[in-house]
Length: 376
Image (tube, rainbow, N blue to C red):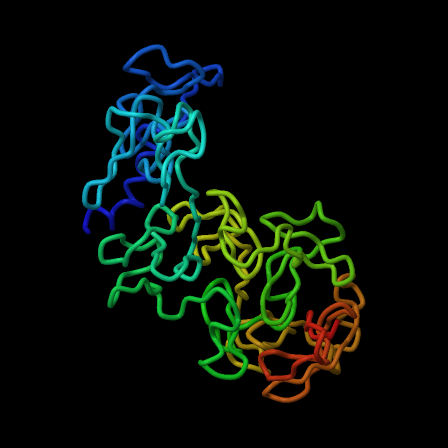
């Protein structure tokens, strides 16, 4: 059990200790070690040619994980003993989960160059696996409960079930519905309405506030990445490039399904700058940046500005009627209503609308979403 619970961590360390490509001083890639013979093209002949927690798979390449996922090279078969699996001398090409004889090669028990004896079901969270199987630390669905299989990163085994280590963790807004009206899944955490964004000034550059979440804006697909394409009507990166229902729909160990989109898989909770971990995937950070707390007054804002919805806005109320004249991006004096009353601040016709406000329970009609205070 303890060995399995550490499998994900060991796998990550293996990447650094033994599985990484090696570069010389000129930036050229050098093949890794091959201790048992002449392994061409960086391949392997048996698992002794591979690093810690790596397996020489049926494609004669080293892979992090065991032979239940990658199979074995020619001349070896996958033998499972208790909670451990290893390649032992014997007929080759076997492996995979649930195999009943090889599906490739010349038949028999795998055949030369067999395809693994069974398919792999990839997962990023427990709901990705069928009943009776568990999302294991290696990101595949394995028969049994987490008591013996363990849990994928971000989940803990309780009462034989994998549950989020963070009780507030979520993958979709529906996961937060039991907490009350207006709660939304923001950056993988169920977030109260008061802690969601209201307009783009609370989001990173080139983002808009969409239904309380900071979302990359776009004019075409080249502005989007991380599994999303551009909605040309709304101008935000919200259209899944590869739609999915479960992670296995994505068809790769490198992707997971998060809220209906195939996104890059996280490396043990680590994501690129600007992205956050959600159900073992990496998505753009949706969290609002708040700078002040006391609504309707200057608070921590600069002179001439007031705090509204935890963000600072330049006031254009008398006698500052001309305050917006020299602000190309926010050149309209707009009236904004908050919990503290009505206020006049500098904005634009693309933000600071008053048609909708997720933080105040003011939603758009069915079929529309709230972007920077406007129903679109």
